[in-house]
Every structure is written in C-alpha cells, then in structure tokens.
Image 1 (cartoon, rainbow, N blue to C red):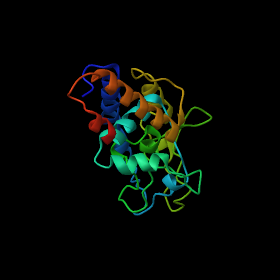
Image 2 (cartoon, rainbow, N blue to C red):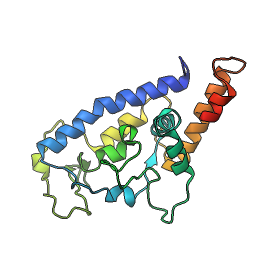
Image 3 (spheres, rainbow, N blue to C red):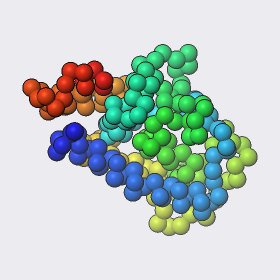
Amino acid sequence: MLGDTEIASELKAIYDFYNTVQPDFEAFMDEHSLCCPSGCGECCAHFIPDVTQSEALIIGAQVLFGTKKDLLKYRLSAKFESNIVCPFYDPWSTHHCMVYSVRPLVCRMFYSCASTGKNGEMEFRGCHFNESSSPVSSEDFSKDIHSMSDYGEMLASLPGNSVSTELLPEAVKQAVDRIENTIDLLFQGSQLFTDSDREAL
C-alpha cells in the first residue's frame, strides 16, 4: 500500500534492524541462563518507554494495519488511572504486550543485554522486580559483545530516525497521523482507497 514512499523505506529499515538484533538478545539470555519469571510483566505495568521516530512508526503501522487495530487505537487514546503504565500492556497475554512483535528496542534489551558501566566495562543490570535472578559477572562477557548504547546508536542511524525520543503514546499517535496522511496523498482521487477504507483505519 505504501509502495516506494519514504515511510515504506523507514519501515523496512526498522523491521530489518529488529530481525538483525533480536537473535543477539536471545543468545545473550541463553548463554547466561536468563529469563523473565513466568507470568510477570511488571516492567510494562510500571513503565512507558521513550521511543524514536522509527520505533513509533512501526508500532503505528501495527495500530493501523494489525488484526487488533480497533483495540490498539482505543488503548492509545484511553486515559489510565496510572500515568506510568504502557498503553499496550496486556496483563492477560503471554508476553503482556499488545504490540510484542514490533515492541521498542528498550523493551527488547531489558534483561537480555549488557550495559556499559561507569568504568567503561560491560555490566549486567538485573531486574528489581525479580530479586531471585542470578547476577551476571562482567567477566562472563565476551570482548565483542554489544552494549545497550551500541544498539541505541545503531537504531538512531536508521533512515528517517534520530537520537531524539518521545513518550510512546504521543510518538505513536504522530506516526499514525503521518501514515494516514501519506495514504491519503497516495490514493487521492483513486478508487483503490475509498472513504470507507479510510474510516476503517
């Protein structure tokens, strides 16, 4: 639908980036025997991520074109009693995330990536919701391992992206508007995209 537009290129770039880095996170967890406790999700219930434009864009595409678009659009605009819960937090699903396949980088790295400490050495910061987690020593890390900041720099360098971030709800709303405006321009005066199609979005 988006053809060879700038948005399509940006979406492909973030999609490919996630597919490239996700195996790193899974390998890190496997190597150090790390996993979130079954049925947890406390990080989602007490945290709203800041996201870049690319991250917001791919979530916006999921909101508009995914199988749960009505629910996702509602959650995006809903008012919550707590102002520190992610709008896409789902306490009843397996991963507790309504947009899990396109979740932001920080959500992917949590508990599955090393950080750079004050002394420049790699370190692992555990989860304060999971006190029983075994600490991982910096001595366990291989020399060629990437840190959270490394992945952040890779993300910021994607086409159409930048180092600036915004809280997820507002960023995704802006991304949804941008996608809808692009579609309107593409199909203006065309019968391929009707008014009822636009209303469905």
